[in-house]
Structure formats: C-alpha cells, structure tokens
Amino acid sequence: MKMKRNLLLLLIPLMFTCQTSLAQQPAAQGDKVSLVHGAHRTGRRTDAAMARWRAYGLGQFIHWGLYSIPGGEWDGKTYNGAAEWIRSWDGITKSAYDSLIYHFNPVKFDATAWAAAAQQMGAKYVTITTKHHDGFCLWPSKYTSYTVASSPYKKDLIKPLVDAYNKAGIDVILYFSIMDWSNPDWRYDIKTKDDSIAFERFKKFTRNQLLELLERYPTTKGLWFDGTWDNAWVKQAAFADELETEMRKMRPGLIIGSRFRADENGKRHFDTNGQLMGDYEQGWERKIPNTITEVHGNDWDCVMTVPENQWGYNAAWKGHIKTTDELLEMLAKCVSLDGNFVLNFGPKGDGSIRKEELSLAREIGDWMAVNQEAIYGCEYAGLEPQNWGYFTKKTGTDKIYMLVFNVPVSGALRVKLPVQTSISKAYRLGQPAQTFVPEEIQASESFIHLKTTSEKHPFVIVLETAKKTENPKVKYEKAKT
Figure 1 (tube, one colour):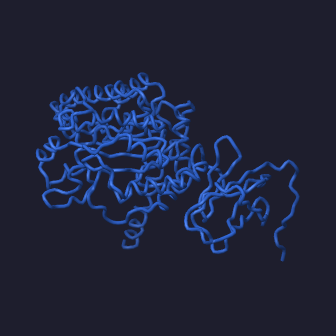
Figure 2: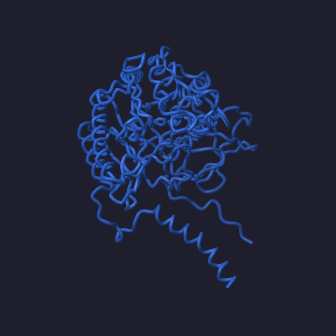
Figure 3: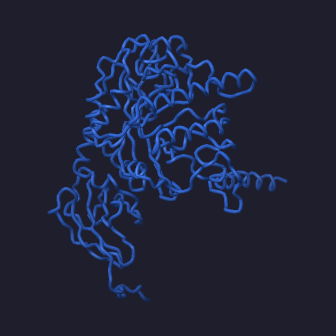
C-alpha cells in the first residue's frame, strides 16, 4: 500500500505537468471546436500598419496618474506593491486616495521634452496610460468627472503628448484599463441581477470612453489594454468581440494586443483552439522568451521595468536596478526573437522624469546612435544561438548582425550559417574600416577573431552573406579511428 501511495504521489505532478503542457498547445486540426468569439485570423497580419509595428524594435512605456503623487508612500509608511496599485492597500482609505485629484498639478510637465528624451533614446513608439485601474483619466472625458479637467491642472494631458511624440516621429499607442475602481458599476464578478444591471451600464461607459479616445486622438496607432482578467469582463465575450470589431472599423489598421477579450469559454490571449486573439502576444510582461518556438510564430513585445515590478513613480527604487547594458541585452534578445522591447518610465506627480531614467535613456540612445541598424527593421535570423550574444537579420535582405555582449577569453566568435551560405564581408558596425577575415573551422561554420578582448560595452559586427553557387566539396571528413 505504501509503495502504491508513493507511486501515486510521483504520478500526480507528472499528470498535472502533462495537462498544463497540453493546455498551452493549439488543438489538433481534428480536435478544433467551433467558436463565435475566438480568433478571427490565423497567422500574422500582413498589412502596412502591422509591418510598421513589427519594425519598431524599441519602444517606451509611460505610467502616470494620481498614484505618481504619493509615489508608493502614505503617512510615513511604504507600500510594498507596485506604486500604481496603492489605492488597493489597506494603509490608505479610498476617499483619501480619490482626493488626490485636488492635488494633481503637474506644473513641470513638458510634452516636448518627454518626446525629445524618447527620440534620443531611439524609441519608435510610446504607450501612455490614459486611465489606470483607479479610473482617473488624463484626458477630459465627458463620461466622468474623475479626470484631469477636475484637477488644478485642468488641461488635457494626452493631446500634447500625442502631438509632441508624433512631431518627433514616434507613434503613439494608448493604454486603457478596463477595470475601473472609481466607477460604481464596475464588478469583479457578476453574481446577482443587480450586478448584471450595473455591469451593463459599465459596458456602455467603457465603450463610450474608448470611442471617445479614438475620436479625440485620430493619429493613435493602437490600444494597449489592461485590467481584463476579472470574471465580470471575461464573461463579456460577445460584447468585447463586437466592440473590438467596431473600433477596428472606426480606425482601419488599429493594433490591439491579445489582452482585450476572452472567447466564449473564458480563454484569454489564446482561444480554446490555441489561436492568438489580437494582433500580438501581450504575455511577455517583465520576461523574455528563450527560444523562437515560445512565441508560436506570432508578433510580440516585452514591456520591462527598471526596478522589479515598479511601473508608476515610486520614491524608493528597491532591489536590483537594471543597468544600461542589461537593458540593451534585453533589447537585442527581443529583436533576435522577432519581438519589440518596451522600457517603462514613471514620471513624478509634478510631471518631471527622474534623473536615473533620463540617464538610462541617454546611454541607450548613445548606443542606438551607432548600432540602430541592427535593431530597426530587423528580425529573427534563423541561426543557431551562440553564447557571445544574439543574431538579428535585416528584413528582406541577407545582412546579418552579431550583437556581442559576452566576449570569450579567446576572442573568437563562433558563427554557424546555413549550408551553402558564405560570409562575403565582415566588419564592425559604425567602423566599416575595421574588417574581419572569417576563419572557416568546418563546413558552414567559422570563427570571427576579435582584435581585442577588452571591450567595455556591447557592440555589433555586420555579416554580409552570399549563397554558394557551386556544389560544396567535402573538405572536412569526420575523424576516423
């Protein structure tokens, strides 16, 4: 009996692992179920708007709102969660938090300066919080009084941001939280008739605000949704599907991630058949895949904080603070796996951006000024990964970039190319006179020998490749004993 019990204990986690793995896989062709509100497209979008999004490489995220005033602190006490969630903390009353609206006066806000910093960093798009979970709107919405118009500042904050970033050549995506703590009709779940009646009013309110945003800011390229995981919203498959269709019709080319809605079975991101719902995977929050297979052939982006899980302004950055080189390596890894990398900034309540974030932006921008060619318009190169760093490939060409972060003590960087592909030219990006003569070590595999191993920052080597036209001769036979 004891042996049987021990065997059962061993099998239970194995069964759970198998079930979890299967649940994450698309259903087999013969097992697919009929869905009305599942994915309406298979495979990537091929239109120009999505191609532009795919080529961004680097983006900026901005979390800004009432929560930026306390900055994670209240009455001398520190909130250990993410600063933008402080209203949910039992250390502050809801009424006290909501009264922050009468203190919101960002006199140091300068949209042009924000956009200039993002432009210098090399960001090609920005996602800005129009409304976070607390429900406070940075635009003067006509559907609620809980907006910037009721604050001492009074003026719209989204329009100057959109205008400044667009002028700087940066596309704008609007963040919008479906969950709204300030709205009395919001429900975490629908359990009674009264809940259902209230949530119907909330759905109308949500639709009105989203259409209002698209009408007020017509250059918006996409919507980034949050707060969609609660049961009340998950149960709204038909409504959310219809609303998404309405927004896409209103703004052709609009880009929406996989977070917005669930299918009729409550599946989010991926429907019951394992198909992506939305235009790109939104599941890579503060994490990056390790292999190309993990992104299922979909578009995706990674949104990343500088400290651990701090989005809105926090007066005290705790724990590990990411360095410029760490962030650059994350950027390189994302692009090498067909994704974009989005770095978060949390401005203060007065509208200024903390000096540490501006410093990181400048240093990233200095690197991008030299190496941006290996980031913008680049994709997965299809090459075997190497420990020294990452490969990217310029879309539509045979040009390959080696983004080097870890120089081996030998100074020899291994490169393995597809069969019948050769390196016609190798040189350092930004220093074309610094060329390298590849040493072939076996068929389709070479070493790029660095002239020094004392590099202090990541750098890029460009490989111009060509197809071999002649049949390859056997140059390297396996050793015989």
